[in-house]
Image (cartoon, rainbow, N blue to C red):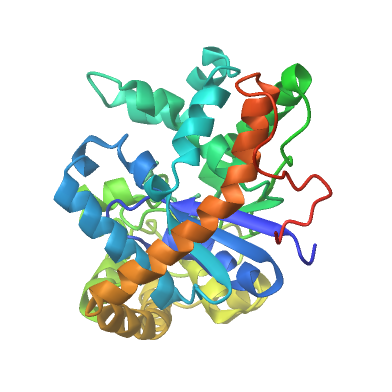
Length: 346
Ligand code: AQP
């Protein structure tokens, strides 16, 4: 797996939370060491969320997201960290791919069903969201896409869109693999362990999510009030979803095995478990919060990083888009050399 290209993204909406960190961002930080890594701040995707469609809000959120990702350890010397709307090829390829994607495929997406169910009027962008996501990934001919469990279906759709394109027009894309961590790909909400921890719910429900840059007292309060079950102590047999969620968070942040964590807490009261989880979360997140505060005080430096990275992303994306347009008959000869022999570095 060494030397493969990794691509993933995060929407600049709401508060980036511990689920984003454990399911996606911390695997990204690890991936940038052994792979060629490209990470996207997906502001075009954010436009599908009505509250995000306010220019000042979105612009501030893009910068905030960049600061959080850098604070978590994304290193611009190793990885490309760019803003989606700065690379025009994403929207252009999304349109071209939408012309080969059946509507039925999109209507079956769980995320579309969940989000649209809550809306009076559903925008076309919400339905087409996974096509834009497919374009994001396919543009860079990524091999691996580290994501949380909620994105598994979208990666499968990306593969199907690529296959359909290949069957009609010829080979151009790499079929990407979703990269899910065995434990922690779906961290649940603290206030309701039957729902995944999410930015959107975190906006409206206090105590749902742990923000990566929340102050320690807010984190401790949320964990202390996390929903568990009617029992009092951790048992050896199958734990309830709320207790399992706390054990999973502890397991991932401590780096210990599930068995070791289970053994350490069996017979201990939920208060002891919650205190231990809160201590570990605060110890892990406090340095991130401090780096975030430092970075936030340097907006020009943040902007310079994403502008420079976006230029690098533009150069990587151009040959794929050009090849796609050529295969679809939009122009005759490729204007940009397409690296078919797969030196992706170029
Ligand atoms: N709870 C989670 N556990 C593990 N991984 C997660 N991810 C999201 N939630 C969890 C992963 O984080 C990456 C960025 O996802 P996103 O920007 O779509 O964040 P979100 O929290 O899913 O945001 P929203 O806008 O609030 O979406 P909904 O309302 O659908 O939850 C992705 O790799 C994602 O899998």
